[in-house]
Length: 357
Image 1 (cartoon, rainbow, N blue to C red):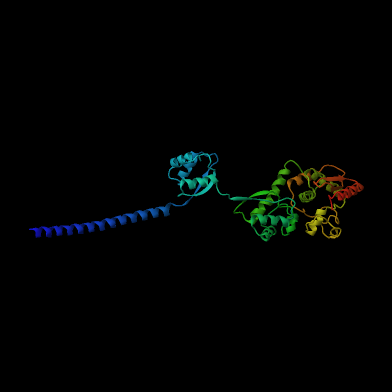
Image 2 (cartoon, rainbow, N blue to C red):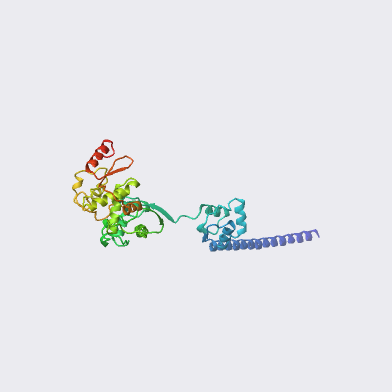
């Protein structure tokens, strides 16, 4: 009897053991399959849903407005939860308006950091100074934009840039573009090419001139816009102080009226294409239409870029009898006279005081 009991009990344990093993295997396979399904689904969902969303937040938007926009665009899953987060972090009134490109899988703190900084800049600013020659102007633009200076030159002379003021209607000569790239500070689109940047600056001169001539006309002593630009460039080159610009224009006007040589050093330097502090007697011998010590009248084109101040000074040149001017103060102040002896005396005094070389 005991032998039968132990035999049956052994058989029972074997059955139990086999059953447990089978159950364990079934459970393990089931769990593995379930986990695999979860992983597969999760991975599939992530691949499907993670994307960059374009979001535009208008100026003056409240925290409620912003969270609603983000919710509607699928950046967040709960506008209420994000608004509560913002209020708890004291960020409700610190988010910035603008156009964003935002991933839709960000944590609240990552998203908030983006909205606190504001949208990335899609423009940059460059400044074209007054008084630069055309080559210098293009070099300045190239250094600020990264465009090759030779490509900028080619853009001008190839006709890709247009101006109604181009000298003699001939865009193929770089010198004919002198003065037509308007000195100013410009906001440039990151995607703008060289031609678009130059066109913006050339068109700006047209805009400035159109605005100036809404209620005025060319003065009686100036025949064309090209002459206006040439004189403005001479005023720009010669004047240090705002108060002297109209008087310099007046001297130019009187010398033109009397058919006198303008004798402006800046035109000689332009003809030489050299920047230096003193014009020597040998420099005055250069045979160039820009040499106003040799040829009467105005140079054929402007000698530099000029700003609105010089345009206005030219348009509003006062009536005077001045035909000489001279720098007589180290701060840039000029003196004016109609008497040659007086001019020589001022010149000698300025030299003694170290104002002029």
